Image (spheres, helix red, strand yellow):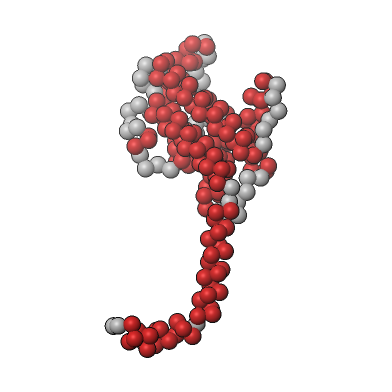
Length: 192
């Protein structure tokens, strides 16, 4: 079909008749598209980096805790599924768990909702973990993205150090062997 034939077609005639509507729709689309670029890319990037860093060290911890499995980083597990694997009432990770789950919620909201904001209310689980770190150092607790960054640093460091302890004191047998070593080391009798 050549250009002249196309312009005489019913389709082309309808497009021309609807030109004002299409122009309005294009203007609406452009405004919507621009709203993507008005978001604070620095905050979004910081939250994504925090999430990625914590996930890296969570993978390290899960692999140390479960040495007989495939390295967790090579699996197709989501962050939430990894948290479920780590969520055990008898390990140190419980201290971090409310903040880890909230970090994942915040990341998901920012990734999937154009209007999502990081409110003080959303930061409560993270603040409740980080506040004692700030209190002990005599520093005021931060707010917003800086608070999330502090939590990511704290959680990542804790996960990394604990993974090293599991490997060192668990004799390569994972979390259960480490926990047995720990009970023996502190002289705590096992329930049962």
